[in-house]
Image (cartoon, rainbow, N blue to C red; front, side):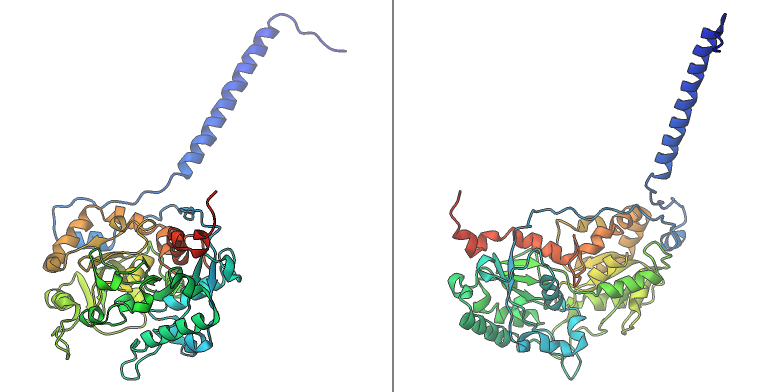
Length: 437
């Protein structure tokens, strides 16, 4: 039998409902607040002001920096899903045979190998039917001929090897002749690109071979002023650094680990910059760095090679990237990949993939004539916006954009190259023959 309550029961029911609503609202507010607090990105700590100048280096070296939130993969900046590239199958003497020397696929010029491998594995972009291709890739490895004297790559044979490859594809395919190479791609990952010489004056005298002048060159050399060695259609690419070596180094020393070296450089620094040929190496910049800062405790400068030097980069706050014979240096990529702020000392250098890598936000540029003020400049940065630069630098997307993978990843160096090539589809002979709708 159902009992009917009388009297003040309706009033109690109203109070109970009101209490339930307050309780529900309180719990909801609590959980929402907890969620947003625990998921708030952790900001980098900033250097504290101090009246003591001597305390500045220690603040820089041991600054406590929290791990930044992970950024998503780069979104496709250009819809190039319909881009098709045909890769010529050349005789093995043009590429595969050179790989018998393991250095061929791992040294600073090895982007010519890495790009070839990545394109071979890029099923979405590679076509086996040359008649449907927009662009044609010519895989010739010209930088794997290592000197028996000093072990350095020699490229004296580059012009003849490339010309021979063009003769081969001209004889066996019709596509070079129909466009005069206008839609063909080559890699020139050397000091002065397709001028194929390490010395600038000789490179300029030699110039780019006439048979490459119509083609697209993927090259590491680039400056922001007119130069004969970039007077050709080109895409600026980073030098090659093994992504596997970067991964292994970061497993042992994470980006946000302790950095007890303020300024780092290991490499060739001539006491007397004029070499036997009478030319001044690095335009005397490296010599000036050595002379001014070799006894400065803020600077860790080493003139001799060390196989574990990447571990030194992970311990460093600032990494010097001065010019050598050419403006660019593999240190630029290594510094970025290992979280050390690059200090670029190479007047007029043009840097790769500027649409994906905001260089002004992750690096410092010091004029060659200002090398004598390096210490003062870096102290100032350390005391002001170092944390902001590091936060930008440690974004995984930045590191990804400068590294080549055998299997292309969204946003990596090969991806950036395809983005640039997509913008050059006006060079496609096939598309030029398609009637406009």
